[in-house]
Image 1 (cartoon, helix red, strand yellow):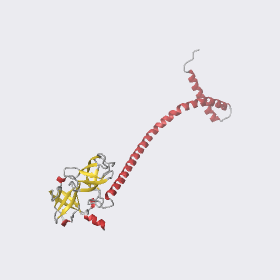
Image 2 (cartoon, rainbow, N blue to C red; image 1 turned 135 degrees about the vertical axis):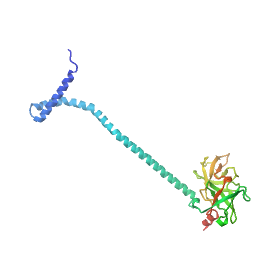
Image 3 (cartoon, rainbow, N blue to C red; image 1 turned 180 degrees about the horizontal axis):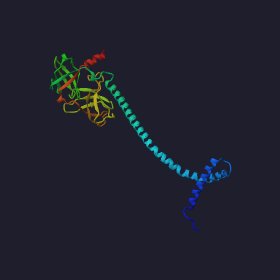
Image 4 (cartoon, rainbow, N blue to C red; image 1 turned 135 degrees about the horizontal axis):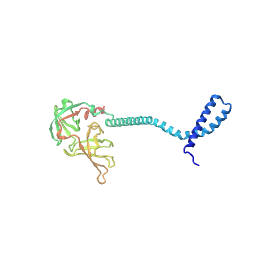
Length: 284
């Protein structure tokens, strides 16, 4: 038998509409009478259809509802990422402050920093002064408060120490002289030793650093200020250019390129609170 396509669907829609009409009419007329039975019958038929529609379309509704929340979630995620970056930056800043405080404490060694010491500026007027191969003459002397064994620096770092003084002049032994030496420390690993000159144009030698020390080319070397040294702690000396262990030696062979260029010195500063002044203050 031929059945017209779509006829069943049309009948279902008509039946559903009629059932809804009867239910509405029953609510208006009360729960008594033949309409009550028709209501029960209609609900029995409509309820499965309603549940089917709910099962199919509820996930769709939830999906579109969640789309509206995506923008809020993205905004919250961006705010959280900004908070993480800010906290990470603050943490790194705090670590940097702690490291700087530790370094300054070790550099100062509970003593006055060389940057705050009283100093006298002097002009270099000669190279190779006196009995020393690598020394310079300066135009300030005893009348300016300068004494033997005082540390001499330049804007680049350690120059040397005063070895001879007259009323208005002084001679400074430069750290590159083979007879000159200074207590030194490697920044970073904090290993301490001694730097010794080899002459102008040659690197300084750093002695007494164990072969197992964590030393790298490029590490900075500064004065250590240990054992009542002439030189206050923390004055820059130079940069490590070689660090090797040869044979069965218990120490490393270390070359340090000095920051100060001996032949280009023009002005220097003499630290008046170093050398004998510092020793006298410690002995009180």
